[in-house]
Image (cartoon, rainbow, N blue to C red; front, top):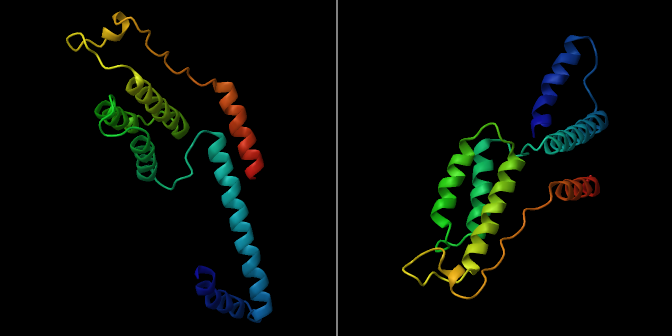
Length: 163
């Protein structure tokens, strides 16, 4: 639509330069070329952003909504870290020095930890969080942090196959 709106302006410019306006076939070729070039530029721009850990969303509000969706999908409202996770995400969103990929990794880790705490037996000794340690059962081991090198290699493989 934008290109079609620009055609009369281009024709006037060509006429002012003592050139003939574009024919329909010429216009179709130029329009297709411009659209293909714009798509290639968008793809390469998004790839460059991803390689730097930046978001491909157009604004920070969209990033925040996406992170909140990850949190809402992974942590139910009654989960052990539900309230704290929302406050933690609010603080994380205010940290402008972190890239989007760092924030996303932290949000996923909070979801993992919330799921880990949800699997633990409930405290029985006067509400102590350490009661499972003394109940005779060994609590579940916390989930390990993902190996950054393996995650980066997987991300590169995914980016290379999607390009």
